[in-house]
Length: 560
Image 1 (cartoon, helix red, strand yellow):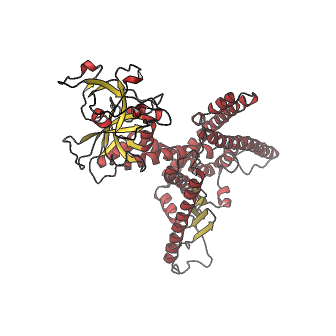
Image 2: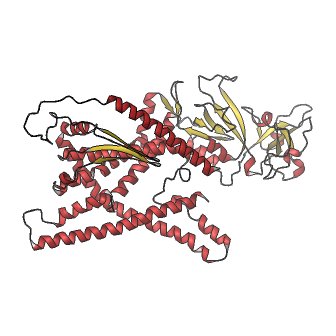
Image 3: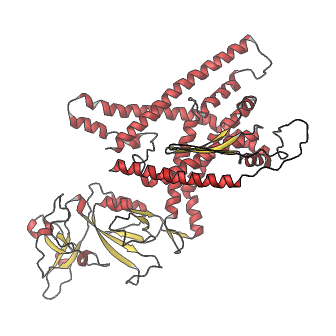
């Protein structure tokens, strides 16, 4: 069923993309006009890379549509890139020189990281394969369970497997942004070094979006090695800049911006703000967006999301209560079927959903002391009378008081009190706009179904989900752009690093005077080429191994 759901969502996504492409084709076709004819200034058609204002090339849009593949090529952005570089040629030369320096450092760092990633994958493979040599199936299972995807340097993003399908929009947007920044770097650098690009564009292949620029090879190869490096390293450099931007934003820049725009931080006040609740969750009707959950059971969320996670990720999955609840023993007999609790019946076997099983506090361990009581009157009041023993409870004439707590032996039948404060634009019966809700189920179900944030909107018009959406998008961009920079600069087959390595070797090993063609220079060229090819082959094998190994380990980890 899960596989069918993934396939169905994949088909729906591509159906939506095909509709968008069809609409864009219609729009671009209508906008096409015959360019005005200009009187030629010379007898022969010329092309100047210094000033192209006198001649505007015909801008063509090309669409290539295949099954689960769409490619768009255009010349519309050529003038934009050209104008950007003409604004400040000196700045761009300095900018892309910084890119060459950063890329040269990243090549070394990337080689160390990819070797470390290969070692980690080999260690994971050993954990999987070694126990299989024995006949003990338990040992084999433990060997597989020892493989944790968090131990891997590169975690493959496989939609529906290692990536939640609900995050597919963030995944596509982040990859698109990273690809556009990368290729924009190449395009701007190319113009800044006097090489106009032929075209640029975007593509989507299955679930991988990307971008590209077409740079004429002959003009590129006619440049000196350092100018070529400025163009080759520009994409990686722009990915590093994008990573720095996302890092600063996540470190506090985004928060400052949102505070200026009208959100408030709950730091220092405690609690978390509800962003979204899964539709099929029983909590969905009770917690509108922007509701502040300030306490779970007896634990105020002083440290906000940190306390929220700590309480819902109890080690044994069981809720712990530090005090009991004072209650009068019932005059009505509810029976004892609600206390017949096991894994099959985590809430007991009573047909009355309004009652739960309680036992004395402190627990006596006696089955006979367990009693069925109405759940909400006992534990759901805003200020219940608490106790450590029955004698702590206020005595009333003719009424026997008891100190009890919910009896929840099953992990799937925990009882959690959720203290909530509604936003000012939602009015409730209470003056302080607060209410207590009781959740019965697994603790982790609350965490999975309720998405929370540290920021809450001050005004109704502000979407409560915007901080969460922006933060998640930036986290994906941060991860993808750093991985793209680190992998792309590696001297492996068809990556930017392959061409960068060649120019670095020429720059440092070959004579700079092109007129000095000697036997020695030819030997230097051949040895340089040999070094380049050897490094590229070895790196390509390691990169291929890491990519394939990361996918296999990711698939194994997701099935545990």
